[in-house]
Image (cartoon, rainbow, N blue to C red; front, side, top):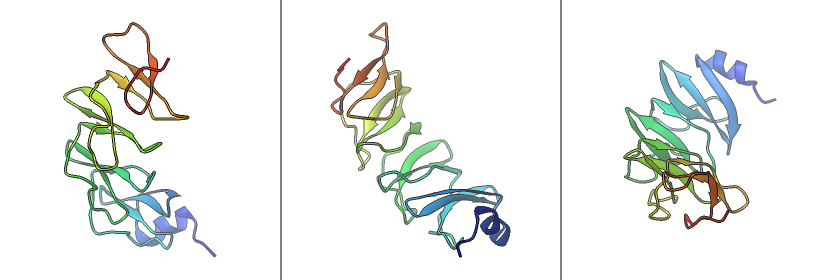
Length: 148
């Protein structure tokens, strides 16, 4: 019988345990975050200041003021560091550098050149976007082009 999240937290001394995504759950102990397996054991040795759930094989992680994505083994998926990152959806995640937002690929490289003031996750082939050049928000495709 599988243990409940509360049973895992109590047994291992975790202050927080989230739901499982892609076989791992976020857990917090001694002020640091990491992912755990369903049996409650840590999935890797790294510790982060903040982490998110896994989506498309990667999870957001923060060390200090730098955000990036990690793999299931806790290792960063790429070298770039950002001011902010989002969850992957349809192969892209938003990131912020120098106060501007754009989408990145799984290897951390920008998916397009254009930059925005606000961005959302992709759903059904488009994502919400806003920029200083446009009076209203709009939708963009995977190439960063306005579609509506």
